[in-house]
Amino acid sequence: MRILIVGPPGAGKGTQAAVLSAELGVVHISTGDMFRAYVDSETELGRQVKAYLDAGALVPDEVTNVMVAQQLTEDVCRAGFLLDGFPRTVGQAEALEALLRDRDCEIDTVLAFDVPEDQVVERLLARGREDDTEDVIRHRQQLYREETAPLLDFYSDRLVTVPAVGSVPDVTARALDALRTRA
Ligand code: AMP
Image (cartoon, rainbow, N blue to C red):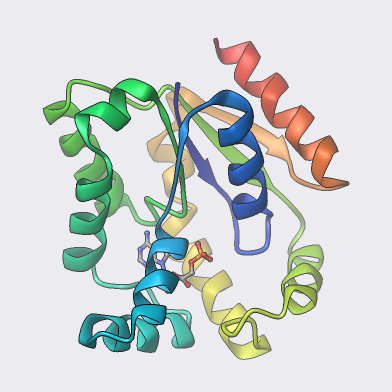
């Protein structure tokens, strides 16, 4: 199974991606986690990446697409994967399509996490990550609306909407149901 999770910041993508990938036995690939690991590594690339994360800006495609290409090996394609936080733009989605074509595999299902914006801000402020200040959250939300939301049209043939409100187990159950209806 090859799955994408798309949703606004604070929709619970990371939490659900970890639970769902374990449940389904597929590889969890999170670009946000990868970038945070870069930042922790305290290398020059880590310092450059930190500036983007702190500002809630997108890391340039030259870095992001290469990093994803390294992770999405043929073995991972065969095993199945769940991508969380990538693609975030139509350009990245096109790069992903080309990469998967090379590996002779494709995305089966795109889970679109749907959550009202006021709940999202509350969740993010409660999470308290370093890039969760109100200004940065607002910027990430604007980027989502402008750059990422068009993916819902891009993937309209494989899209299932999952209401991402309620408890973590409730949302997991809804996502698993949605995947079953696509299988
Ligand atoms: P996330 O953990 O998905 O909220 O991502 C945290 C931050 O990592 C984002 O605000 C961006 O700065 C960066 N990031 C994550 N995924 C991407 C991506 N696909 N393209 C560009 N930047 C990304």
